[in-house]
Length: 134
Image (cartoon, rainbow, N blue to C red; front, side, top):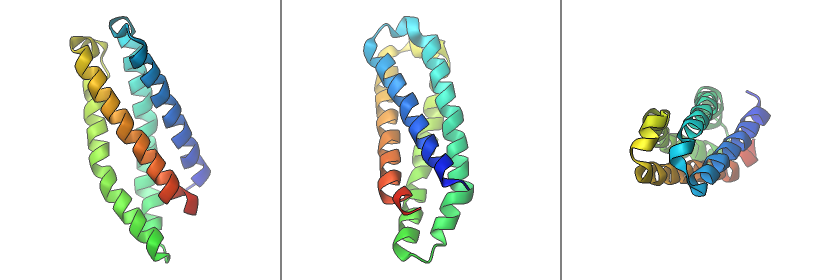
């Protein structure tokens, strides 16, 4: 597995989250709902590919590392990611449609802020505790 590819995916995911956050903050979500749904779909595509790469290649290798701290950290982060992945998939399935965004904009804003914060926290944690060792 190319670790540079995974690191680049982190940067791309961060950029898409930032774009979505800016769109949400700028208002007029009723008019931007279609564009938001497309960006959510794009984020989902990259995130699913990224998680698949981590789950199938990176985490198994790191969990089997001879470095006990790295192995334990990888195991802990892998377990924690399960719930975030499920939460994101629920968010995606709810808001990949402009109509669903428009149906309850305040709820969309709240759930978007929550999932974006969790994803950024996860990326930062991986960068600080895991990726610096690979």
